[in-house]
Length: 284
Ligand code: C2E
Ligand code: MG
Ligand code: MG
Ligand code: MG
Image (tube, rainbow, N blue to C red; front, side, top):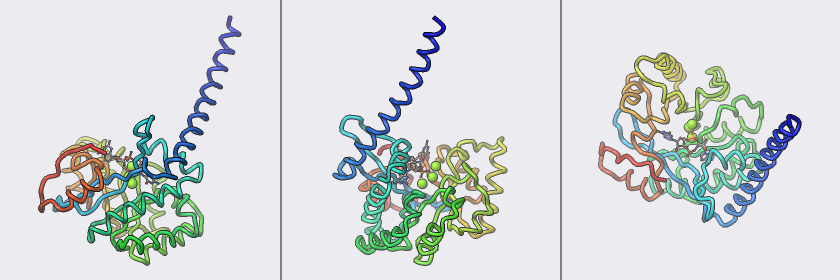
């Protein structure tokens, strides 16, 4: 009895493992197919709001995958699979192209695009980016590439060469999800960036009574001393926005202002009159 229970447990574990691998494999195959037709993949845009004026100054491009039978699949699920299977190159290029196609018609708006470490390690990546800018007519100075801090830990010469190439062309570099990993201000002097984005997990803890206010204050002060702008992501409440304003955070992003929306909708939001309050929406 005990023996068979033990065996059952072992079988259950193995089953789960192989189930997980099967699922990964299925998603990989489906993603490969989705990328070859590119009709299931779309790009949503989440407005970026200037803290002082509360005007929309740009938007972050976020990949969306609508599968015909599985429905909406979260990037948290498919981006890691794309990274592990070499599909991130094609996916990243698709997102960058769609983002630049939209951004080309919106000069002066910052269009931010997430870049995976694998893309940045590719010696041909900078060339791809410049091709897309030329083909779409997007201005380099309107493009911001969001990298994650794992890139900063990376000794890769190629990554830092690519970053230098981008910066000298006027493309902005933002360090995403700041505060989640091995964040250290000392990396910022090694690979200079234009902006840090304080992660949502941090912002969501912000309330007047919490130690996170003091930590965020220190982060903003240090960043500004290094000439780095600060965006707070995942801003959901007025209290969080007020605290971030008091701390001098430059840019705000979050459901308080708008969730990610379609390219058509973000263009509408861009053209709305000055200081018009954003309709709250979590669509796309
Ligand atoms: P991220 O770059 O940090 O993007 C912000 C994520 O937070 C988005 O989730 C956005 O929808 C969500 N978010 C924004 N404001 C709020 C808020 O107020 N509350 C809450 N609860 N969430 C908010 P999403 O679109 O699911 O993307 C998740 C992550 O997947 C992104 O995090 C990014 O790391 C990755 N990702 C998305 N698209 C791409 C892409 O095209 N390329 C790469 N390499 N990664 C991508
Ligand atoms: Mg991002
Ligand atoms: Mg982020
Ligand atoms: Mg984040």
